[in-house]
Image (cartoon, rainbow, N blue to C red; front, side):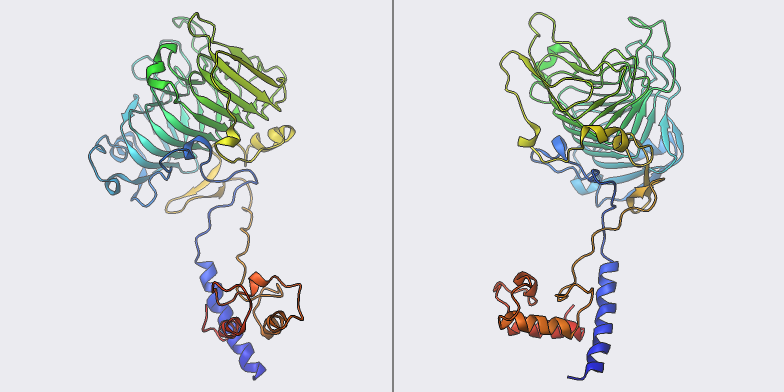
Length: 448
């Protein structure tokens, strides 16, 4: 066979193959432990968290546009009618708590965007609430800023009431009037990853019970809600950062199986972080409590509401613990879902990294979603797809590969993986002349 013809055909085949690879969609590569997709409790059950995937896209710049994008008219519609991908652009002021009953929505925050409310009063101090039967919701790279903590039994910055299948990722949430992020009334299947909680604004004194209500995350509204929330509120908090100003509730839990994985606590001089309350079942693993941080407090102390399970393993600043009151079964997250575990000593450098750790630090582009980090440098190059027929791993397909294939067929090459020699893709794993034909077709560009 003429070598020049082979080389010419080979070059043409590389052009075609390269074009195919270049146009393939590749998920953004983030840090080593950042999957860039939901895992944990949001993935357990009969549904899949996909948000608004496949739906129309809309850019939101005002409070009115947000309402139009997150309307309350999903009930009774077909699934395809209410899928939507929403991009928040710029700083958007909300003047009151907005309540939504929605499904199949993704909310992305473009770099520099923010939802905020400056009304520090009981009736109008909240931002977003997702009510009963809201489901399949994704919030990524969203910054939510409340008006500052004030104990008037007001609204939260972000609240889920009876909502299910939620993924919150790389958000920055803080300064909630009542709380910054709460879930209650039977909410379930929630995963919160790479999210940073902090209070930049001083608390307002003169509240009903306390002068400092910088209480961050309350899971379960009251001990008397077992009929609604018992067996629910199951949540994974992974790679989250509770930062300055968070006095307590990081999180404070009732009822749910809650996995607190590789979380970073720098909220020094706080009251406590993990609040284990009635029927809570907390599993804290490889978390890092900085010096000056109080790690936990028992809230299952009222007569008739004493039951709880608490397991703590591998944490810095809190001894390994396995304790319970009552007879509820302990649980282990790895029995439910797989996950990546960061060594505890590495948590500050990974989760606490301003550029690639927890918080709203993602590069988001309209039409593409997350494409990397804003200040994280170049994103890692995705692993290269193997080239069919490249048996000598030189990133090309040539007659040398044909020679290798013949040697495998005739038994003179016993080192090359035979599975790689299945060029024709048949069910017969034994290399044969059909594979040789397919290999020549690749060289000549007739088999792509």
